[in-house]
Image 1 (cartoon, rainbow, N blue to C red):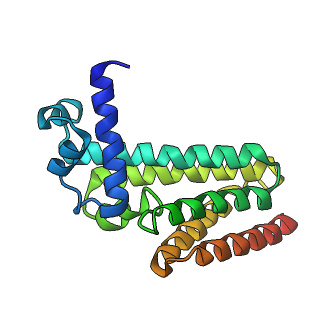
Image 2: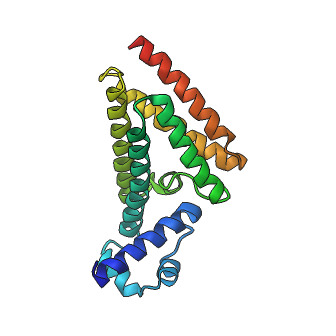
Amino acid sequence: MSKGDETKARLVQKTVELIATQGYHGTGLNQITQESGTPMGSLYYHFRGGKDALVAAAMQAGGDVITQALQAAFSETADVPSAIHSLVELLSQQLEASAFTKGCPIATVTLETAAQNDTIQHASQTIYRQWQTQIAQFLVQTGYEESAAPSLALFALIVIEGGLLLSRAERSITPLQQAGEQLIFFLQLNQQKG
């Protein structure tokens, strides 16, 4: 990895960490450059679109972590309940390790900024659609009707995101765990109907 690539990676990683806890507006460029140990000129060299471009790249990097977690959960098992349990366990561990300051790496910025910022909205939409497609493909592989899989995958995302949000609000993993159990129940009912 070149020095320039290392600098860019440090900027993105630090931004991932900061926006997950502080959000878009609470995270300033000075803080990012200071905490990543990079000069402001490097930020604008690598991210000509400034803060929006950097945050969008950080959102994609954070989204990639969840994509990998989904891949791991789906490759470890061939059944939906086990995959959901695996994912909920991973997300629960992350919540507890951060003392409930970090939930979904995309949701914080999306809720705060996507309605007013086209760059952030596009990044959010792209990442959520990637996850939906990934979940839908797994559902089809495990026996769900191909025509129903996209809407079931969207519902799964909604339930897990809601569980993460409520777990942060409660400072407890219980809402996420309950969301996971209800999601399993719902998906099993819908597979029987398929």
